[in-house]
Length: 90
Image (tube, rainbow, N blue to C red; front, side, top):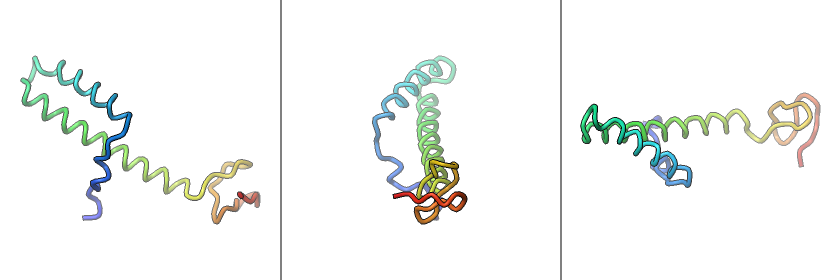
């Protein structure tokens, strides 16, 4: 059950306005071919699919970056210190 998206995923952000506007236009374009009900279901599935994808991607990036990135060599810092060049962050 840990793989299920959390309710934090449903947090509304500013860029969601652009996503919703784009999906509304997509629904308007899809309506003549499928009908309004099916177009609305497809758009709702797309909205939540995009939200899940973005959340997974954000978590992946946070895991990769960790504490930060060394400004000298570009490697991942561990305990605020670069393992390659010894540059201390802070």
